Image 1 (tube, protein in one colour):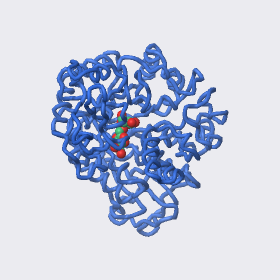
Image 2 (cartoon, protein in one colour):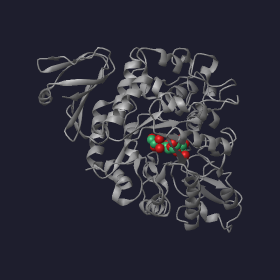
Image 3 (cartoon, rainbow, N blue to C red):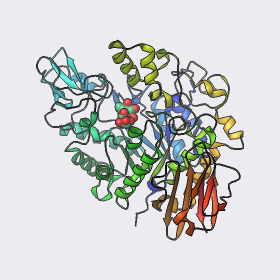
Image 4 (cartoon, rainbow, N blue to C red):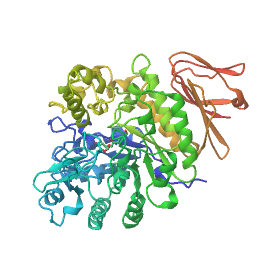
Length: 546
Ligand code: TEU
């Protein structure tokens, strides 16, 4: 049976600090702000906080371009602020994991400044430098954020490689000195007392041998999962990770379940769990049939061997209630329904700040209001081809990363109580209607629904370790699945549509006696009529069999 581990039982809350709470009026959230709001997180029932990058950075990609791994970004605060935060987290019995961004640094990092200074600098080999080919870049690859993954450095006449922006040169993991330097940095943070890492695009570390042209450069898969990646992660485990009682979650784009297992199978000694992107990449909008397939494949592949994460949004992926639910008439029910999925499907659940009050995506009218480098670069590229600006803007809005990055909505005072200054990114105009204070005062509070889900998880191992079975495969509207563990069976029944649905319980009719444990309607009784059950719009019920 699956071994018990604290990080399997944990609930993680992601703090995108720059949008959480601003205490010094500069328009950016800060570490002090996170410290002041810790009880908001603790009272939800959360065990682990994942903090997005706070390290020194010119901030072209919101901290994912690091110029000093040992210092704090001014906007975030001081090193003492960080220690106070870590203390505050620990005092409340929670844990803190930090972002580890070691696929690339900032172009302002002293390593890169040295590396680019001359071809024979000792740090030259810490990054990836290649000669031009036929007067152009070494190959035809795109990067995540730019039309080419290569930038020519005039001074030495070679190109450097970047999977992301021009300002984010990729490190050369082939170089053993570089690897040791990264491990040293990881130990520094772990010795300070942090409880683990969320590892940014960690499966991109190994690069494709020879950098051959891609047949379809638009499909970025050549950037990840290359031979050698598992050797790096096993070395990292041996050198660093295995010496601490911590949790690790790898951000692993471009994997299906079978390859995913290679990163998290317990016997392989690499990572504890991963974020895969099959949901995000295959489902621009809700697709229940595909979602069920993904859940099933991953459950079957990881079962008893490895561990998964559950999430539907984060700082890169648009707010779940807007993208996958219903952020209009049914917003509150829909937010709870999606929460129930994330917390009752197999894997460790992640909550992205603001999700617990059902915050929604935005549509800013002008490109000037957006800050996301991925979106801004794409806007420039597309309008540069002559496409009308309004059309390009409209096409980029739905999935812009800024959708989930707007400031936390605390109350209905100016700027939603997030800052007394000018927010770095505009607050969602719906903040008078959607904010923490109002949610907490309301009878059907989403926050309290999360509290209930989390306290059920704490008291019932079936929610963590239960076997998963989908009884509703192929049904386009209803999702009905059980989790079972040591004689306890729980059933989740959900209607993913805005109309009522009668659902035949068929084989499920064995279970005649239900006890409703949690529902997003106040009056759920789950009356069986004949062999069918009626589910109202977006109804979501969690019940135990008695
Ligand atoms: O994101 C990497 C990234 O863009 C993908 O994992 C993406 O979410 C996936 O392929 C699904 O389409 C990470 C950070 O989360 C992001 O904020 C940074 O900009 C990026 O790395 C570079 O560090």
